[in-house]
Amino acid sequence: MLRRYCTPWLAPLLALLTASAGAPSAADAPAERLTVASWNVAHFYANDALYRGDRRKYRRAPEDLAQLRAYAAALDADVILFQELDGHEAARRLLPEGYCIEASPRDSGNPITGAQRLVVAFRTDAACGTRVRWLRTLGLPGSHLRYGAEFVITLGDQTVRLLGVHLKSGCHAAPLDLADRLPDDASRREMRRAKACARLAQQLPILERWVEARAAEGGPFILFGDFNRRFGVEGTARDGAWMWPVLSDGDPDAQRLVRPTRFRRAPCWRGVRYPRFIDHFVMNEEAAALVALEGFDQPTYDAPFAGEAEMAWRLSDHCAIRLRLQAPPERTG
Image (cartoon, rainbow, N blue to C red):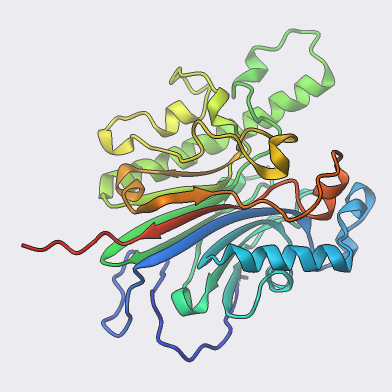
């Protein structure tokens, strides 16, 4: 069952987010600026029983939690899409007061990742009253993968559709049809990668249909989150072997997409561990027109770089990505 928790707030709402495309009521004042973030917090669970086996190393000490909370507050985001949390209580431990929280349901058949849910947090002075529609088809029947989170924001007089994702891991740069390319004597590691790529390939048409539907209806839209994919090293063929050429095929023109992570090196952990982005904002040109000047960044942790995995376990191997949106100026004349 979908759970929704909302901290009371007495100030008038600045914006209304809904799971439909309906316009806000006249009593609501649309926001002129909104900040949206995505953050994979790497096995962050409120249920301590989930920290077992190899995941014991992710149990945070009090000083680690304090640092994560300070980082979350510094994001100063109106909407935060979390990955790898086990529900609303985990988000509550990270966030300051003043957020509504919606946690995804999840098919828990996978013993390793079944506890991981998408969680969406909306700052109440900008978003209280929202409902998220969970895109269950991304979970792939029998594959126990994570659902998508679809919602709408109102920015000035613009309605922006968003879909938050956490896609199948394990196929960061290989062709999606890797299984068809492996030699007969492929290693077990390569076979596992090929299986992951096949699952990711199954998720791609679902994303493509969502993009095509948004392009057909018109208006700005943003697809964002942890894609587990390094778009910058993909091939260009539109034969289904690569993700980006399918998502942004430019047919029609409204399906020509942009991403602010293009041509950028990820600064998280000083760009040493993972220099290429796998977390992205992907949007059409109408949404790109709403991005503020220098409106994309990836805030880094205020922590010493240990040169080893320990710091990534204690905080996260991902830093958040953040996008600042602003309503276009009113047209006169």
